[in-house]
Amino acid sequence: MILYDYILSASCYQVRLMAALLGQPLTTRAVNFHPAKEHKSPEMLKLNPKGTLPVLQDGDLVLTESAEILRYLTRDTPDWRGQDEVWLSFAAALNGSIGTARLHDILSYDADIDAVRRAGVQHLRQLEAHLVEQRFDGMIFLTGHTPTIADIACFPTTALAPDGGVSLDVYPSIRLWMRAIRSLPGFIEMPGIHRLHELEAAP
Image (cartoon, rainbow, N blue to C red; front, side, top):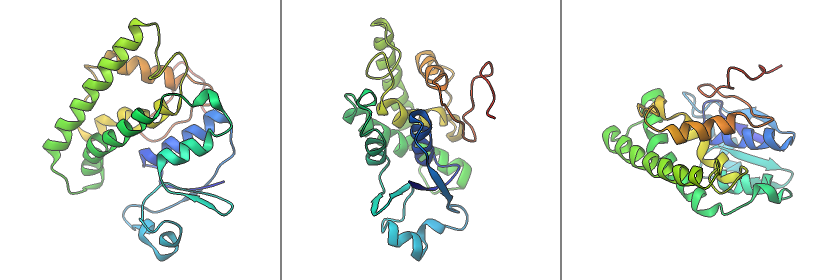
């Protein structure tokens, strides 16, 4: 499988992370998203006419949406599949708010920064409230006692919220949830998202 990848993309990272947690081999091909806009090149537009990342190619199959890529990677691992649809939609909303604020701040994307930050805060409050309820029921992950693609879809954009000027300091349940994800065997890093200090460094 080939992932057309941008190292700073939260959406690309969730695919790399999912593959790593599953132990699935993945070949990455770097795409110069910024500043070269290589994702809009003729070669990339042949693969994905929408001109977006990530793009996963497995033989003749080409997938261009993060959610469908996560479903594809977990097609043979039912333990990673749960009541995920609502959370995949929530992950898209996070990307449209906090993710847009991050693009504005780190890549100078045009956005109504106050509006997207306000929306991002509302999404984080929803996430915090849900995780509090989960903790009351003895669960740490979004849909149960074990992680699913719901967690992997929502984790990167949430963890990178400070890059868009949205602090996570006031969300203790979100921070505990992120710690649980970062503790998973096979967890990998990206710029801005690191392993726990007490865990072994990458080889």
